[in-house]
Length: 69
Image 1 (cartoon, rainbow, N blue to C red):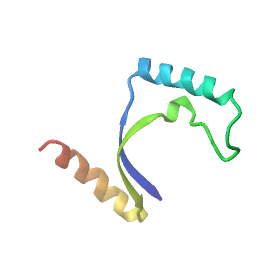
Image 2: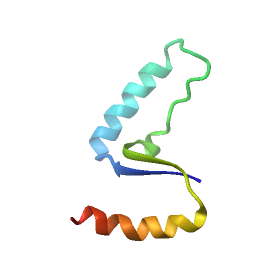
Image 3: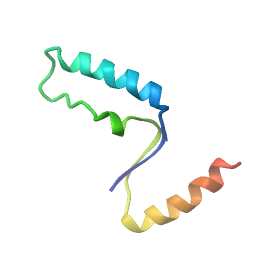
Image 4: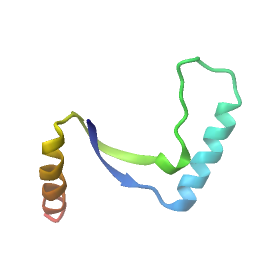
């Protein structure tokens, strides 16, 4: 599975970004561009890449400890 560490966005910011994405999506662009659903918008802090499912539990336990320092 592809994993990353991210922060959720405030509702107002998410709404503003969703409106901007909607405007951009109405413009002609590269066919490979895919727009993200507003519910999936976030701020990625670190992309971890592919991880094993077993490592997910360890990461979920370690992140709160690392962030509290």
